[in-house]
Length: 95
Image (cartoon, rainbow, N blue to C red; front, top):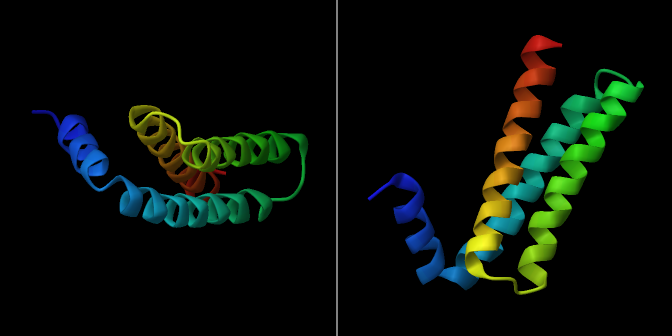
């Protein structure tokens, strides 16, 4: 089994607890990404990055609240977390 499959199965088995923890975790990670983005100013590039990260976090949280299929929710959470980490790395080390 792949890492994705085993992680999804664990997420699916304990959906209520996992979804609650995911909301907290990915929201905090998104807030940290927004902080790093805004620490470099408010130019158009930073506003585009900020819009991307806000949209990713909103989609993840909305998918949980809208009770979408578990696989869709899981994919939104993963996407949000990966985007947050990438933007933190980009703004902290590269820019």
